[in-house]
Image (cartoon, rainbow, N blue to C red; front, side, top):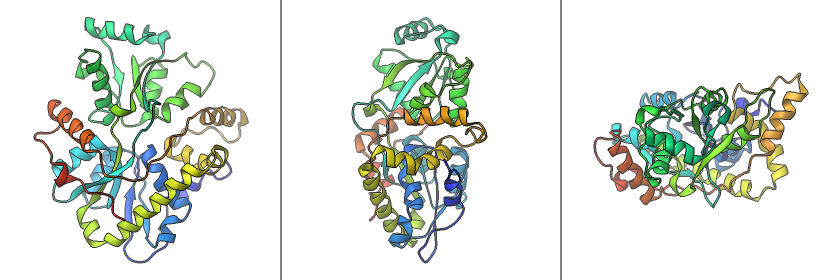
Length: 339
C-alpha cells in the first residue's frame, strides 16, 4: 500500500521509445490490467513504443475523446465498440479482444440485499418479473452487462422490462445503490462481485447472489483503434501488443502473493478510484485488504481476434434492442491484433 500513487504516475507521463506516442485510455476492467502493468513494468519502453495513458473517468468521456481524435485507442466492452464502429465505420476498428472470461467460474453475478429487496432467490425474482412487479436492476445500459442479463432472463423464459434497467457505467455507484436498497439488485462483473461480497463495514446489509452468469454469455473486453493510427504507426501498434502479450505471460506465471504485492496499489486505483479508506485509519485499510485478498484472480488470455460467434450474437441482440440500425460485418469492423 506504500505505492498507492503508482497508477497516477503511470498515467501522467509517456514511457520510452521514439516517434509519436500512442494515446490510450482505459476503463476499470480486467481488460485494462495487462496494459496498465505493461506500463508499470516498463514493457512498452522495452519494446520501443511510446504510450501515453489518458485517464478519463467514464465510458462516455472515452467515446467522446475517441470521436474528437484525442486518443488513438481505448479499451471498452464489445457492445460499446459495436455502437462506436457503427457510427465511425471508416475510422474505428476493433483490434481484438484483450480479456475474455474463461473457465467454469462466473464473471458476472446478480446481487441483492434481501433485507431491502425482500428477494432471497432467483426463483423469487423470476416470480416478481412474471407478475410484472416493479423490479429495478442497476446495470449500465447499452453494455455487455445488459446483454448478459438479457441472455439470463431469456434462458429462463422471462422478458425483463427495459425500463427496469437503470444505472451507470460506474460499478461502485451501482454497488452502492444496491447496498442501500435503492434498487432491487445489481449486475456486477468481477472483481466487483468478490469485493462487494467481502468488504465489511458497520451496518453493511447481508447480500446474496441471485444468479451467476455463465462466462460463455459474457462478451470480451476489446480494444478499439483509430484506423489512421494503425496505418500511420503500425510498428508502434505491433510493439504495443507485444508488450501486452509479455505482461499476460508474466501475470499468469506470478504467484498470488507476488501479484497482490505488485498489483494491489494499481488495482485499488484502477477499480476503486476515490473509494480508498483513510490512510490514517489502519482498521479501514484492513477491511480493504481483506476484501481484495478474497478476489479470485482470473487467468489473463493474450490479445486475440474477437470471437466471431459472440460478435454476431451481440450484433443480433443490439439490433433487436434498437441499439443498432443495421447488421455489422465482422470482416469489415474487426482486425486481428497486430504484432
